[in-house]
Amino acid sequence: MNAFEVFELPVTLDLDLGELRKLYIQKQQLAHPDHGGEIIDSEIINKSYTLLKNRESRVQLILELNQIDTNDSSTLPQGFLFEMMELSESLESEDSSYLMLKIEELMSASNTEFQELSVTFQNTSENIKKLATWYQKNKYYHRLDKNFKGIHEI
Image (tube, rainbow, N blue to C red; front, side, top):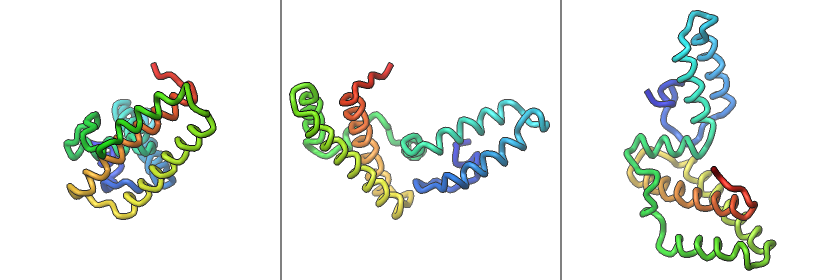
């Protein structure tokens, strides 16, 4: 059972997080061991809620449900990786205010693209391909932002 099924929701990008929270509380009340539920059900509900409330993990789930490898960067436009490499290399040598603005611009464009995808999203191969491309680009933007801010992942 995937996270959408746990909450009896359609597979969609555009979730009402307030409604998701209400469903989560309702499900947890029924599944909690103090109310006769099973611990395993409560854990599944927790994991599903955590997954769906995060935009990137929700997208990753949708891609995986469509048998798309979320580590495959072949969907990226030509030249994208080169551009990211140039920006990464310039983190130490360029004017930090320029880089900050460039990263903010990329992140803003990514958010706009996501909103556009959300409005028109239907589970078609064309939309899934667009979503896979957005997902890959967004991963690079977030990595670039973390590197700029000096955040090192374990």
